[in-house]
Length: 414
Image (cartoon, rainbow, N blue to C red; front, side):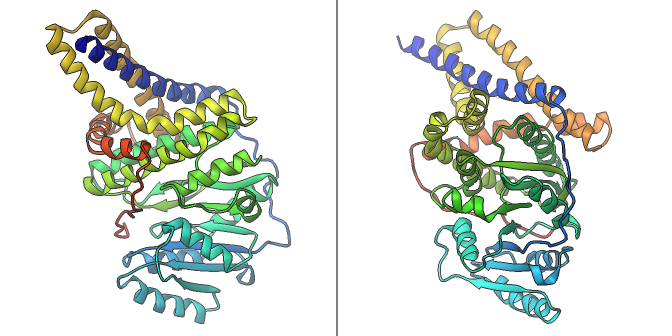
């Protein structure tokens, strides 16, 4: 009886992984079949609207000056651009920021240094408080390590203004330290697949896609319609995206212009970042899957969003599945035929997902030659297994409703 239960667990874990693999195969298929997005008229009006740039920071002294300077260099009329440094820092970041803000203000830049007495709501709380201090109809968000080229705002705003029902525009992210070590190269490969395949396909298919928390612009009216920023999950950006879609809005995704950010260069920092993202996805799933399935969305949008939200469960499922499979082999004294067949099928599916998503993105972004790609791709499965072991417990606790603190990833200004 116990052995049968273990076998059932192995089978169930494999089924969950096949469902997630099916989602990525769906993305790969439509990356070839779906026509390129029609950008239409993306010219800017003569009367440019006011834009608020929000930069939330927390103890990031190495990058705060740079992000302020980049925001101040954006090509937009000075009288229609306000920059908010939303500073919750408890270290010397605030002292550095005071002097950087003063220099920019002397140069005629409308920049405001916003300090809160406590970090209530973390990033979401800071963004909400900043919006209450300025009534600009469009709000761009940059994390502290992100730098946009001067022409970014014009390109992104043109795309957003061209679609009156769009809640936000998200632009692709490049990585300034993508070549630092094997870990950043592997992350960049996965992030390239996320943007060039997942984000692009979901946007073209009309399926809700992610606002990545930075490198994008929100339409204030859409944020207010959806109920504003909420801090009851660790993925406040994804939560807001889905609420705007439920309100009848949509997003715009742009491969260009892009912004440049920083990847975690240490395994511990990478694990902490992934843990936060994974827990946030699970929390959003708990909060919004009910309203999503009761909405008028298409079956494709409901199914794709459900699997996208639930894909983080693949980490604990993989960990449990490996343990259960070992127990099954020990109990039977051999690997039973069904599992042997399913494991071969699993291997084929995972290789198809790995190479189908990452190779197409690698080629599209002209990252390098085939040998360099293969060397980088070979490290990705090891990272997945590591995350399964490191973050499985945290993901399960999030699924059970346990709340945790928002922990920012350290930035060094790469």
